[in-house]
Length: 237
Image 1 (cartoon, rainbow, N blue to C red):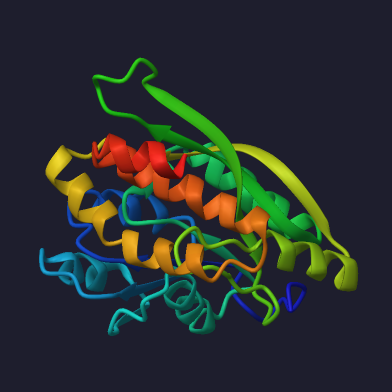
Image 2 (image 1 turned 30 degrees about the horizontal axis):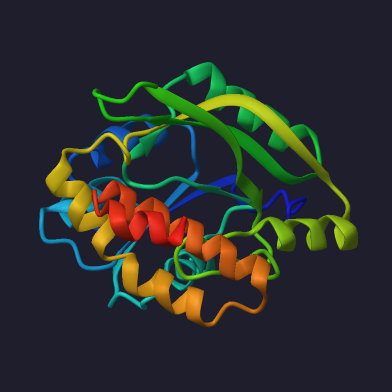
């Protein structure tokens, strides 16, 4: 539970595949500020594993479970910290004062979630160079706090459930996560987004209601737009 002082304060949990380009930057910046690093590799072929092993306290290679939520939850099950921080392999937190602020809040208050400022860098030819949004990236290490959905995995509803049952604050913290995932070269974008299509189509076909069906249609439209298949993008949008 979050207030067990015998446990380390903060575990960084990551799932990665072919993230050698940015992973070392992420882990090098995080290592002085987290108590534990858990990295789960789902099939890298670019040397990501060697980078992860140099920094991780827990490192495992697993077969891709056909679900981002399942892979992420596997990483959460291996964390020992009182709180969990989620970062992807193409993200990092650079500001040492931001790290200090995170640890200060976690040490002094009962937290249901910290929402950090995700800065999405966009391709150089975009009209807008970056966009930002707050996301739930830090939460207690608790068994009900697990992700759902195969692609755009979500945890917010379970955070609300945790808060209702256990209390705690949900706080927006102006600490910036820099994300390079949308700014990759086009070949990498093709590989990254093509893999998502079967999962999104399955979610679309099995949607529980019209709202979720529209949501997955929108996400399919975004993927096809990123892949420059504008006919299919228009169909789903």
